Amino acid sequence: MFLLVSCTKREENSITKTNFLLDTLIQITAYGENADKAIDSAFDRISEIHNKMNVNDENSEVSKINKLAGRGYQRVSGDTLYVIKKGLFYSALSKGRFDITIGPLVKLWGIGTDKARLPDKKEIENVISLINYKDVIINEDKNEVMLKKENMSIDLGAIAKGYAADEVIRILKENGIKSAVADLGGNIYVLGSKPNGKPWRIGIQDPFKSRGSTFAAIEVKDKTLVTSGTYERFFIKNGKRYHHILDVKTGYPVENGLVSVTIIGDSSIDCDALSTTVFVLGLQEGMKLIESLKGYDAIFVTQDKKVYVTSGIKNYYNFNITNEEFKMDNLR
Ligand code: ADP
Ligand code: MG
Picture 1 (tube, rainbow, N blue to C red):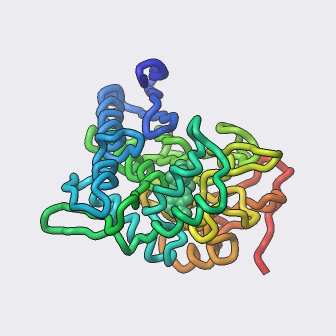
Picture 2: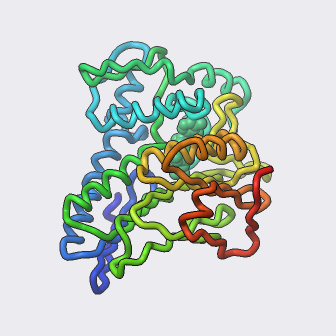
């Protein structure tokens, strides 16, 4: 299927390739002699990660863990184990507001699939009782993972793209690339600076518009920017919007006034986990968390088009709003 959408664009000294993987449109632009081959290797690596972690493929490693839930251990690759362990770290950090065992709830809603629907209260209650990251057991020596209870399931949708973005950059570097931009459906990673030595100017997604419209821009070198928002996957029923970031306490999409959160840092898997975590925590608590962590910054957008940023954004990144409907504000 991805052959249908894959495409290549050549410019004087850069190549851009596009593919559909990890449930999203992925675009990589790289500069330099080896760019063509380097991008192909990066896409091969993304396919590999996709095949290991895709819950819609019953042969993926994550699906195999889920199938054995309550019954036994599944041996997995270092990739899957690493991503699960990162997921558990952020599950613990957020005291379970972010939780990689959210699988049954994600499946119940089916948001972003053709089976999306509004579940009833009883169905929600039944699956909520299955969600608990503390019931993921890891046997480190044997690379094995087990879920304690039957019908539990892991969903790495909140962090797999971040891991893939880190791997893309690692592989581009390995292939001698010094300047590149990878966009994995809102997980952006820029390698180095532009070929002319200037920082990349990256647009921040307008959360009220579909993919590609921006409301602000920021200048970065060697950084990843990950955005989570209500615009990415959702459905509308009786005039109400149901989006894909879920509150494990209520079982419903998070409703806290935020429409998007962008995290900036050096590791895309961490920024991806944090973008979802902070979205769930909300503006006040999320701001506090990011200010307390070294090496991360955040941009929050609320329903009423107010923009809140961490202190690092004001100081370092030449951040500016390009759509004047959006206004900067400060937390009191
Ligand atoms: P996107 O996939 O649009 O980039 P996110 O990184 O925020 O957005 O991930 C959203 C995905 O994370 C959902 O589609 C779902 O698979 C999963 N998810 C939703 N809510 C939670 C949560 N509270 N904890 C962990 N994972 C979640
Ligand atoms: Mg995320």
